[in-house]
Picture 1 (cartoon, rainbow, N blue to C red):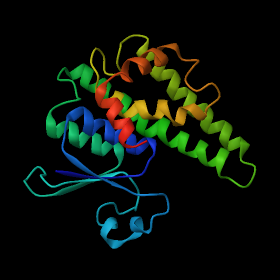
Picture 2: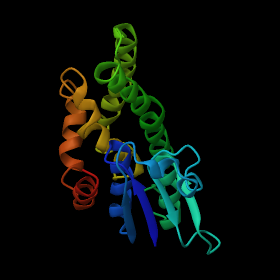
Picture 3: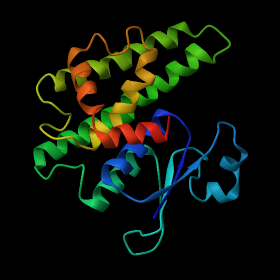
Picture 4: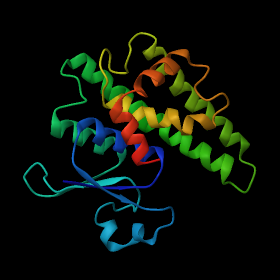
Length: 207
């Protein structure tokens, strides 16, 4: 059994989709923004930064519970645990790693800063907003180019990279001018991935 700690954000949706696509049994522990439990010793033992999402797998690699946090790490752990969502072909597997990383290290943090600068900042940070939006668009352009050559980010099959990227396109990217509408290949991929039952269930759980 997997205990899944989440808040209703794109990062929580990423893990929810992975769990649903893999058909794993899990319990949801939903926290709200500002919940003091995040700073409790109990939760800090799960995630030392007090952030979400995180999981506790009661059946870890050695049969003992294991804690995993950070969306990308959770996704990789679960994919490796089940032997699914990562292609067996070495080239396609590498592409899955690459685009999962693009989402985790480029798209996600820039969109997080864009959220702060446009919706929460109390001073003029338009220069910073312009920078992070341009960086997010660079990542979107790269993803769109990739999807112009293949149906999914890893190639011919749905993978962890798609599972981790879809929630950002459904939520955070929509804050950008025109969202992903200027990117025809992303739009085609979004419609395709959005029809998957596991994706629908994962988005519904964490919406």
